[in-house]
Length: 408
Image 1: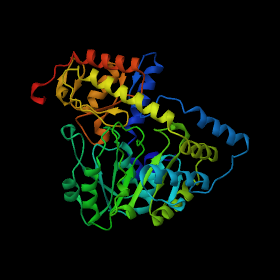
Image 2: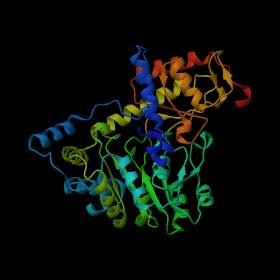
Image 3: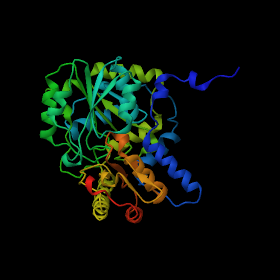
Image 4: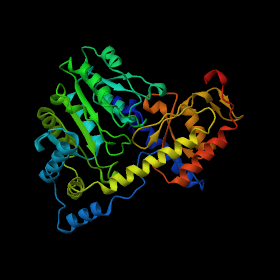
């Protein structure tokens, strides 16, 4: 008798959603394999190469034989570099012993939730949120509590919303700033108001996802862990993927209170152990260098943001705001719900995103994956020509769909 796979797979895995960004990217690749020219604006990956000096550092590490296991939380070299980066750039005082280097910031987040959550613990998740937050929370036994916002509030939740959502079961809150998928950047005062609410509840941990720190179009980046009333219970997550264009290097890190860093070290030690040795050596070199290439990438992304927004504003029915960071725009497309071009009907953001892929051959991601059913996410980590052509295709495709006046 053969094994019945569905009965063998755990209920946790069966209930887990496939990453929407990866799913849409695969659909785009499938169409491309059929000879269809698809412009994919679905993945959150910088289109720049890793700076040459970082690659050279990895080459050097390999040539000198730096290919062995590393300590689980990372080499002392990179943890010292991260500690200094936190102090000099963020005003955060994490000793090397409070830092855990992981195989990407995603693993850092997973380590934290596996380390702190018991069944029934609640985690506040402002929406829109990065797709993996909710699934990692659920997989770790927790209950995600979603706090909603919309384009009219620039996708920012308020301190009042946070206060209303807190219960005796609340264990943590997680957010990103700059935000994936919206590009929203919280100001000092906005974070301070939210922080003051959280500080009144001594058993709530703050998880600040700062992976897009360097792709910030404002004059400030605020780390919530600098606030005196939260510094001892904030975990700050960051990494190299976005600001250094090192997505494939799988290198992220967190700074946290010692008790949490120790717990995450314990978790990681049983799952993956340390990140790649030569990646860590290159990462230390990256952090200790000037941010010349990083600033150049940031400026290019800001110019592309302005380009794609100007183009999207010319598409009837789309509602667009001005993101302040990351490399995404998150337009409200609900004006097209309930419309049809005769053979495709758009009832929700999922349908809209699917129609853009199959009809316009532009890969986007439905906002439903990020906790907002009225929007789609477009990544402008693409060339100017690709951005221009993608929006041209979207605009041409939507001519066949009559926006519903009641939804405007």
